Image 1 (tube, helix red, strand yellow):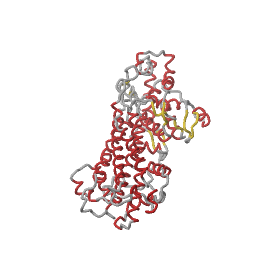
Image 2 (spheres, one colour):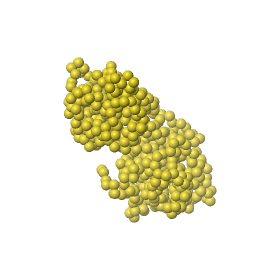
Image 3 (cartoon, one colour):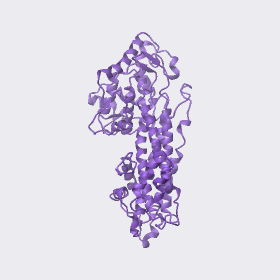
Image 4 (cartoon, one colour):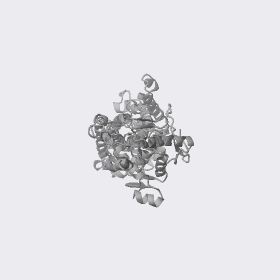
Length: 524
């Protein structure tokens, strides 16, 4: 369901969707914290229960004991209050690139969603501080590397905990700043974490789940973009639209695959290339495009189920049942479901890169492109000897595709025993999510390059006077959207800037494609 931009997104015990997290991450809807008496009571009763246990000298993991393998270490009463600060402090060893502000906001929104389930023993004040960060656009700067995805995203989430307490660094409206200075400037009081609150913030799957939400959106859009590129390629390569016949696809009832074929039929019904009696079947990269792209489309529903169930779960340890007054020790911090989604998603996405790479290889090669100039050069005949068209672009596409394919090895099978063999089986979910985002980046680069090449091939056909290559509907829309920014390649020019511009446009979902869920391929 879509909402007006001005409609606040309420974080309480309600179930949230991937789109809700993205609306917060992209600042499309203002976040607010639920304030009903029932919700506040649900949150506070867990914190009060822990206070009472502590007063009774109860043994509570992570409150009166050390963490992980140190769970047998008793914490003296006078040191209990200092333990949460030490937890986020010693985990401040993240390395590598840093999450973008968009990803950082997604992490805050995901962690907030989990804590509002009411099973983490945190105070309502902690939730208020998280919402304040989102409302004031104060985003913790989080290094990407250092999580094995079980016992939660401990190291990256330590940066969230530290920022709530006024430490480390943040992006304030996109500008890197010292947290203490920002809090002082904006009159925000640093939080003093209660006994279990450090563990509740850090011992969960918020980073991998946030990245999975971002990856899901990009993959969903990519399936539509790859379908539109395939339609353009079919026209440019003089392919056969009858490969996407409705009756043909009715006999193999994968709904996502059928949806891709329906989109292709809609794009190709006007200006369908002539059926070549000497070539009844196109090569697989055109003929089997619905079967490749359709794998991702068919996987989107179960990917959503896994991601949204994780998003709406209490996934720290121990679980605090304030109403029933139970402390439940378990392993809900284990990110196996997100790891599996990310490992499979990156596989499906890389296969789309490979598909588009093969389509481009056909289109630039005069042995296979049915009369187009080598490398799609648009130069006049007298200058064609020194012009190379898309030759280097095709090499680049091959390189990006190879790197994407290389990253498809599942991260989840590389579990490492850590922390004195307490964490002896881990999910690697955050590494899988980072891999998936990298594969998406590479595949979006491939898509941008192949889209430019497809438009070049189509225009070359039109220049040759082939009237049957006229286009309408969605194909015409996309062609015109490209040509308003990226001109025909008549004389060699450096394309890096244009590629980067188009990649950014793809990542902003700035091209008009297909409406979600339409069986007939109606244009959006």
